[in-house]
Image 1 (cartoon, rainbow, N blue to C red):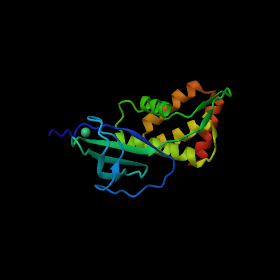
Image 2 (tube, rainbow, N blue to C red):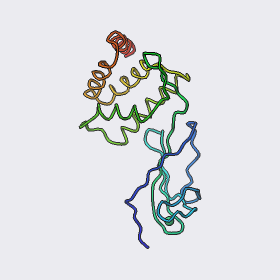
Image 3 (tube, rainbow, N blue to C red):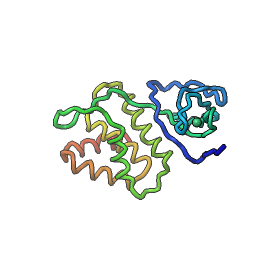
Image 4 (cartoon, rainbow, N blue to C red):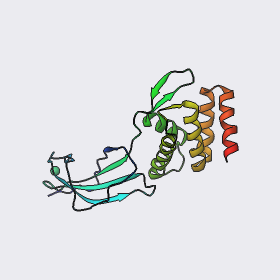
Length: 182
Ligand SMILES: [Zn+2]
């Protein structure tokens, strides 16, 4: 029997709240199918909460072929609408925020786990607003605030890109508001 422990399959689970079900490594039979043989029964052999407390990584093993793989479970913001400056609305997309951040963080030394944590904190700030609609200015402000804590160079890059898209006054207002808070 070949075990390919290095081959990780990352799947994103959907959970709507921050409460975690206690980990029960070795006991839980999940209905997550094996990615190799599609067997229905896989067992969780290890389960750990990431240092940020916002995601869980589970190590699973197929009960038929013994293939081992990992799954990630993290919060997903559902049904949040972003209102653009021109009034146009669009559904919040983690993809888009991640893309912008990755561009800003290009060649910067930020570990993948820290990146995930950054996204987690940004989304937590968004959820803390308890709104169904959030202005793109406010989103930009949150991203800038969190990015500033992590990487100054990326912060300046993101700010300059953000500025080229934004009305200059809007951007400066955002910055001065940030300065007041810090
Ligand atoms: Zn299998």
